[in-house]
Image (cartoon, rainbow over all chains, first blue to last red; front, top):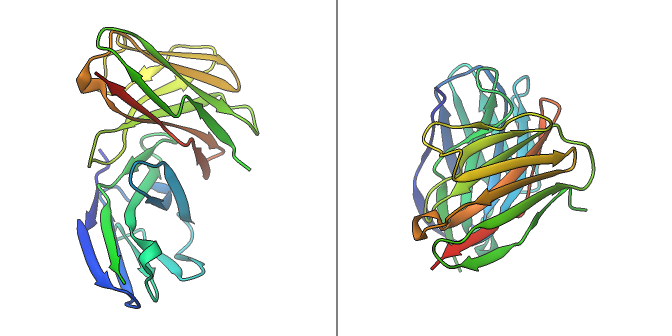
Length: 113
Length: 114
């Protein structure tokens, strides 16, 4: 059974800092890994999708890496801003459990002005 | 533009009543749709897989007689919460896979049962 964990559970940083969010998964037979952002009371905003054959994806100040063999992904946020404050969810879809996603518990990020 | 819509976005109902949530594909035909729920301060958990033309498959611990799923067409799946109770209050989100890579999530429906 796929299990996804995220560290840290919560993070508070001053504006301008670079930061790294971590995601680990137990079953490396994945189709892809996706990072989402969720604002309080809202739905999901897709940030980056990394296919199993890829090692990283970049979008603006965000960079996500994938090490499938070790079951790890990191989301790097450069020059953080107060608007980045949200919960960040990591999710994987896999060969052994169909196309649905298994989500991690999330990292709650607060960027202080 | 949006690929998936959900209706309603918010609903408040009284305990014992039933509530229907719609998930609609706006861009492509979907033979499979997924329903997730998210309790406060928790992550999303898969409830069931909705299959067009056949019965839905439910995850362990999800009561199929309480959460009725009807995949009425290739663009519409509905989730009906029957005899809702306060513990059913949650955020319900559907998603549509396209191929083995892309997946599109709806905006979610917040259900509050009083």
